[in-house]
Amino acid sequence: MSQTVNTIVIGGGQAGLATGYQLKRLGVDHVILDENEDVGAAWRKRWDSLRLFTPGRYSVLPGMPFQGPPHSLLGKDDIADYLQHYADRFDLPVRTGVKVDQVTADGDRLVVEAGDDRILADNVVVATGAFHNPRVPDFADTLDPSIIQMHSSDYRRPSQIQEGPVLVVGAGQSGAEIALDLIRDHEVWLSGEDRGEQPAGPGPVADRIVEPIMVFAATKVINVANPIGRKVRDHFLYPPRGIPRAGGTRKTILESGIEWVGRTTGTKEGHPELEDGRVLEVDNVIWCTGFVPDYSWIDFPIFDGFGYPIHERGVVASQPGLYFMGLLFQRTLSSALIMGVGKDAAYVAEHIRHRQPARHPSDVVH
Image (tube, rainbow, N blue to C red; front, side, top):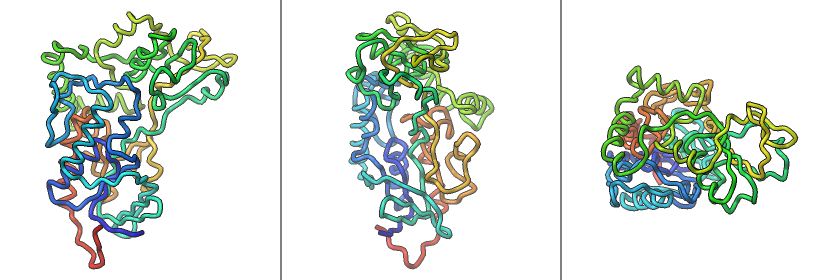
């Protein structure tokens, strides 16, 4: 079935919903496509114990303030519920269960193909985020088959893990949280370089004194429009590396009984081997090694050597009508976070409103 719409937003998470809100506010005809069956489902699929380390009062989208205690730390289902309520409150045109297969061009139009549907659009906003493809080292295939191994994206709860020691590879936020989730019932090693953490952990004192400073830095200071922001961006993206963890996690890890070891560099006789030659006899391995960009479904030469789209604040100059939302350092350090997507969405939506190509006589909007 062929359809036509002014703007298609691909992805119904926080970035896509914020974009939809701004487009609706400006009167721009659009539709939001999401491959999940329900709004917020991507958050519900994360591990049970996950909690944001930014207080609820900062974890909001434009037009809908946080309704709970301002200092509370939201869980994954809290965020999913918030996103669902947001879409309902503003009656955003979200179509769930629609997986986009390809984005191409047809003359001066963009084409989005999703199953049997072919949708023509003047503008396409890619709000899926780049990091959906788990990064797992090649030597993972050489682990003994008796070892249960999974990526952090598949981890939900300790019951997935068999009895015996666990190696968590990757010492970023995910690795730290999952290691702490497992230490109650297992011997746990946390493997990886310590890339630092925020200066203070979540809590009333940090929320009132330190957190506002960190939020100001993330939303204002670390901005790619200035040399400081560009330097920080380049440090974390070229090549990709994890951002600092929530404050206090190192102390919590060391006091919990988790043994923090060096990088895992290979295997020996089917077991993980560390950079110092130590071999760990484990029964489980959790790969908290991040994700790699995969935009192979976007059929335009607009990506750099690391797989990131080449853009200016989400606007792809080389392909008119194509935009991105929710990228890390799209504008600031907060651009990939709930607190940061609103301003980026407003900028992208204004750009779309001003370009508004002339309609073709045969256009029919569905």
